[in-house]
Image 1 (cartoon, rainbow, N blue to C red):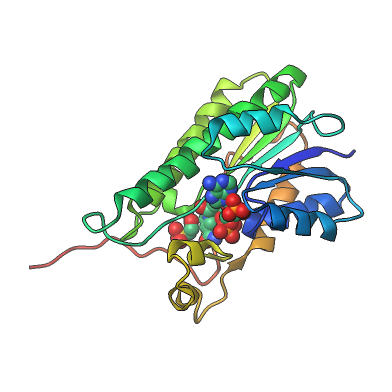
Image 2 (tube, rainbow, N blue to C red):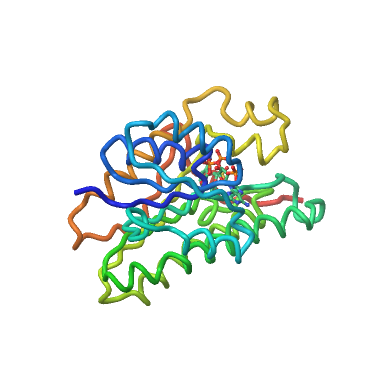
Length: 250
Ligand code: NDP
Ligand code: 8X3
């Protein structure tokens, strides 16, 4: 049966590939992002599917509620929310990192995700049905140098996902925290503020994940029987492992 799927961060990366796979499989999609022209391009690409576009900044609370509350038939009964909008800014160590970057990551990855979730929840609660996918990260569990606030914001997403699921007990609403490792999207271009040579280096010499890998997994989870909730899913490229504990010797 066709579902209504609202996807943030649909102009790029995981969100864009989720839009493609859900739309091509007959679901109705609502694609969101700030870059309206990219939303229109994607809508044109998916011309044989039901696609609505909503252009808003997830940091703008009022705009989010206005846009989501403005949805009419056949899009207003959202079955699936994919919270993919997010970013890392900079890889500087805490003493050097920019406070503005820290604030933007908190505003986007934490507050933005909360606003969108809060705007979508009433319809799921009323219909006693829904599935929320949050894009966490391995950075939420595994510290690395320069990960400081980005990793902390993803740790928030993980714990919020579990607490949300707990609050929604008995309401037949599933919540999964998806925790990818290194994936080649526009993520590093954004992190390094357009310095593409630095961004490309992140994925040099091994086969990273691609957005389709994560979109396929999200789509698969969305088709599990409704009594099955995958709480978290950590996914890395085969080439990526853990760094081990570090000792700073004299
Ligand atoms: P991309 O940079 O390719 O896509 C990010 C998306 O987020 C874009 O569509 C962008 O849309 C949207 N976005 C960013 N800021 C805002 C904002 N203020 N308002 C609305 N939309 C916004 O990155 P990915 O697809 O890789 O990242 C998606 C999610 O996955 C993020 O939460 C990221 O932290 C997480 N992640 C990424 C990993 C990776 O290695 N790539 C690994 C683990 C997690 P627009 O600019 O048009 O608004
Ligand atoms: C993105 C993965 O390892 O670059 O969340 O932080 S990582």
